Image (cartoon, rainbow, N blue to C red):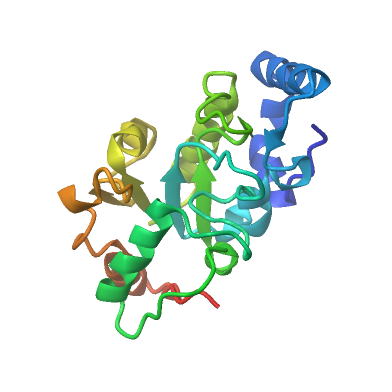
Length: 225
């Protein structure tokens, strides 16, 4: 795993790459590949969330848990898939909520959320890799320590961010966030198993834009291009 991390993130998280847990994680990934296992996303895309959304540009954080584990889906952004992929169920529900929350939003034909990332929406999974066809297979190997460090750094060094915490897993991360400094949006997860228990109708996207505008920041254009 050769690390190509955007410079403002490297300034904040560079020390993490020298710590024991990260060295062990690199060794784990190396050994998995030597066993012939397929790992998603490809190595050059593991840190896409950081590389597309520099630390100094972050305005919104949307926390996911794991990369997608199907062929060609994961590309380093939570909830996002590449253009030619079928929309996963959670993303379909995110689009459904957007269509009722944001006036004029048109449900796009693809699921690549890079246009959000380039506007300051950090699409961060807690675990950044996964073995093909095995959901959650790289949990508790060290990634969570790294992504927790990223969340802590954002909370500590930034002001007035929006954190979207969908579902119990994401909401556990609230302990890493200074809730007096930042705006927290909590709801059910957009998964088909829980979307009707409080995700639909929660209006996270308009809430985010209203808050950003109140802080004198530019609103996010949620329409996927």
